[in-house]
Image 1 (cartoon, one colour):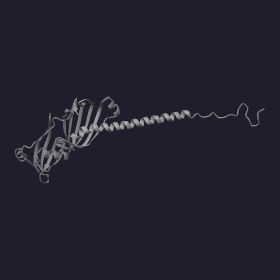
Image 2: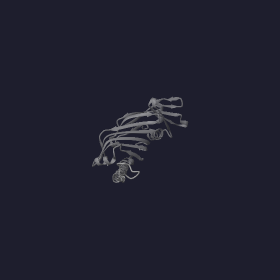
Image 3: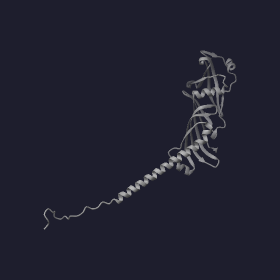
Image 4: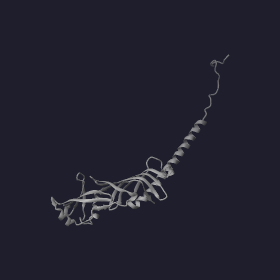
Length: 248
């Protein structure tokens, strides 16, 4: 006979013991994976920073400004292992570019490969933005200071740069940039003093034969001017070139 209070067909016993081993193994695996990812992330960050510095050092000496270098979404450690970089982007502000200073640059380099001679680049595209202040300094250099302390405004509709000089800026000299193979020629379109148009013959006597060309030959990576445009903020110059090797 079963004891009082006991249910028929049941046996008193212990609850099966829990097995913590699988849980512990999962924790160890997750911790290990996290450590590996953390180390890999640190290695990638270090490689990206170091490689960007190496690229920047090559260009900062010529442009006289600090540069930011990017390598796209592919891990730099993988790109270094292959010895090639599918896409390199370079950004800089206040660079010195031939006769221009204070230039903002954006460059895109495609298929950059390290070689024994330096860097081989399949394709290069550079956009240079020159604000009014940079243009004013360039105009002063190109005209040999003939216009004194001048300010520059832009007229995008007429594709002209307008240089304001003299007392109260009443002398206005218009220049239209025209693209040439090895540079930019600034054609003088007219001279005004206040509301009065100055005849070309008199304007030539006043301004003389001041240089009005910007030589862009012999640029790094074999870059050549492709397009020049007058913008509301200044002047935009776009340069491009195909395969080229830049020596270290």
